[in-house]
Length: 279
Image (cartoon, rainbow, N blue to C red; front, side, top):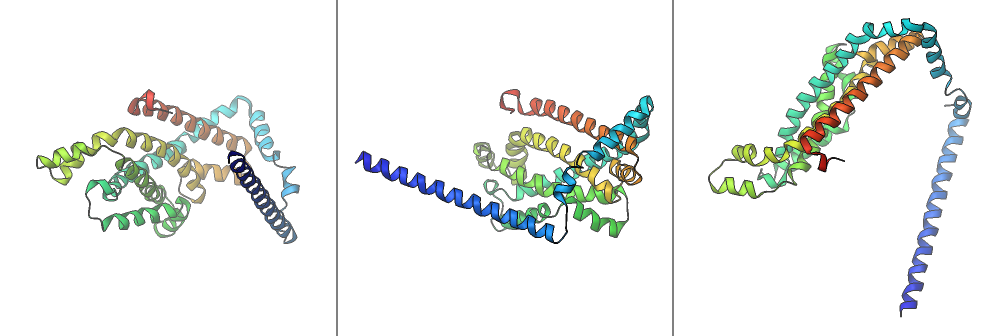
């Protein structure tokens, strides 16, 4: 009996490997045929461009090196643009977190909200997450004009949907016993949320908030390429004019700011969540 079961398991394993191999072969064939079709339409030159992949980075590094000590003098020049990008990200993250908190509370099944409201709020958050910040910013820049305001609104809109989804998952994993106790002594819905939910979810909310701020700094920099201001606009200008040393300085400033924010976020997340629960 055992030998029969062993043979059946081996047979199933063999069929699984066969199907996996066929799937990979089919996927490889699709990729190769797609590449051949793209090359035939002259829509790109991947292999030709691959050999020149490092030419542009080498060019901007060379120009930055030729500047000598004058290269470091570029940092104060672009510092206001970096601060503007950080401001866009900070304002958008704060506004997005406020809306995300409201949406998450209205979409959590264990918080006794009207059942009909839950799928509606969840679909609203899906819509807010579905559109990238770049698409929303392009539309708002067309309507409101080129300035940091459309970028902040676009990032805040996307952040509300993204953080709302994460916050609602945190809400649904809390201990409901404090809520039952508050309800038993006559606490209304807002009081149950204030004293029963917020104290439990605040550490995780803070962790997700800081992580989102780091993501929004990168998003805000990218939106500068479409006229939203900040370091992205300076980077677009420097690349367009072929100013290699300025491009290198802007990339280095953006990289250092991201590293600094990452380190600060890690420290604060450890502080809020606790070192034992941090991974």
